[in-house]
Image (spheres, rainbow, N blue to C red):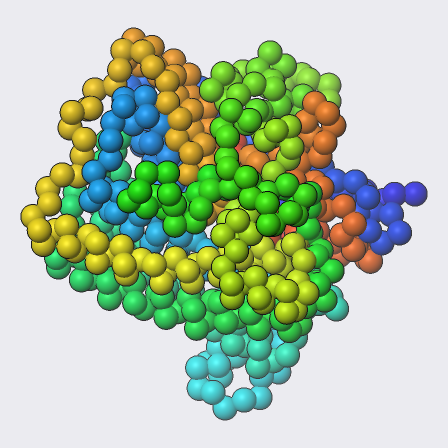
Length: 519
Ligand code: NFE
Ligand code: MG
């Protein structure tokens, strides 16, 4: 008989997620992902000035805030018929690029690495490296003081856990270094946007400030440091683990899902409609057959979500946010977006499979790595390297514009919102495809809908009963010991879920007895 495991909440993610799995014969045979918060952002936007949406939607989240501001501005611009000056496009790309440099290493070191490391191995480090010895000293003292959080407690290490003392101690030192690097990455974004995590430069129609040459130089030197770190530390660690101790997990494709991928494209280039990370759709793991994105194929189902059935299976442009907390079969505040009726994975793996950079694809085929949890980490790290290498070129573009006296940073011809209209913004955020849809009536927001990356990845079942991408990816995941569902959380965290984005505002009466609160 199947044994049920409830993990509520899943820790080391953003927001509130409950995962229930049924295990039979040592494998997951059924899975349900529930977002246990309700989201109110879309509702409270009604009646507001459309230009406020940039700043209100950013408050959905403290991680990918700038992505919401950016995509919201694109939605309003499309309703206004506004164009974006080149300097504003480049400044936005650099603000957001720095945010991605902050976001991806944070996910690997601080949210995920403890799923793969047996931290206790640090106590057995016998090497002579002064930096690593100081890490050992620090950890041993914390253990003696009984103050091991956030490194412990955690799920029990298993056969895939990295326990070689040199490797683990190095990784823990990188965990600490990552904190410093993230502060510096935030400084980069703040240099061009006033502050972080909620920026104050991107507005509908452009940006509010053009950096001067001194700021550009400061950004450049911080970027050089990030670029070096991302390639030599972050990517190197992911490579070492993925092709070493974690190779069996990678080869087995643990946590692979439907094989349907979607990306709207990331970082717009000068030519309209082109992106640094190109847009595309892949079905059934047919990587050679990338189709263009058609937004009219996006719908959202609510059959298993706590929203009124009247709002179900519509394009987000026609969607609404009307709660129904009494639906018999509902189990999540996350809606179920579908593309051509299919559940789609979004995020770094989708982007890398659409782009197919040679070194990444060669690595995947050389080691026989299949789509799954490890491949997601590899894709995330590799795209960070690509981004860090591209950003100096964007900075050159900006410097050229500034040196030539460019002042156009906003489409001032389109400052006011239209009396009536509608708009759509589609761009990739760090976690994947992000869309905002706006309807304007009498200069005010009549309706606003957001379909965010975590809504795609962590959606519940739809009206056809098809599980969401994570729910599907959990099927078949090995759980040899039901007391230690470490592979389940490895798969969940590989998506870098952010339930704060997917839904918003805590619904206190749905909080349940915690069955697992470690890890
Ligand atoms: Ni709150 Fe987000 C990203 C968006 S959510 S982190 O990236 O949009 O999936
Ligand atoms: Mg929504």
